[in-house]
Length: 175
Ligand code: XMP
Ligand code: MG
Image 1 (cartoon, protein in one colour):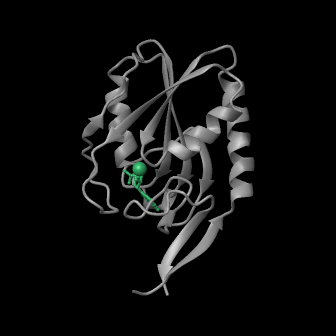
Image 2 (cartoon, rainbow, N blue to C red; image 1 turned 45 degrees about the vertical axis):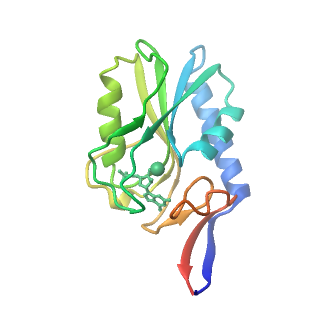
């Protein structure tokens, strides 16, 4: 088996600084309010865990898990929920937390679904954004880093369930 080469794209220290900046902006934007964060499993769990510890507003957390279509890296756009949220979001301020925004198909479909539950507000916070890859127009209100069209792992992101534990965001390739 050939060795897998890992190249650091975003280092742990830069991630930490940026997550803190995002949390500051979110805390200011939602001052005096109470937020429900909805994390998309599994990828967002590391980002969300770091983010909430820098927030200075009261918040609750919930998670949604979308059915995955095997080990593929392509999004189909037609999402199926395999674990739904357990909190009522009607009349609440909701922030969806996702690891990476790519084609936009997953998030636009999830947002449509969540809007039907009648939240007071609904915004999106993504750790990474691959803007060049969009297939549907979709923007997140809060973005950690814009990245080029490269497949990345680490900080919660996986390749076939591996590498989620890496503290840096890395690009992998065979050497
Ligand atoms: P959309 O629907 O925006 O889906 O295409 C975004 C989802 O695609 C996955 N994704 C990645 N996962 N490294 C990963 O580990 C990547 O570089 C990457 N790009 C897209 C991810 O599951 C995300 O939720
Ligand atoms: Mg994901």
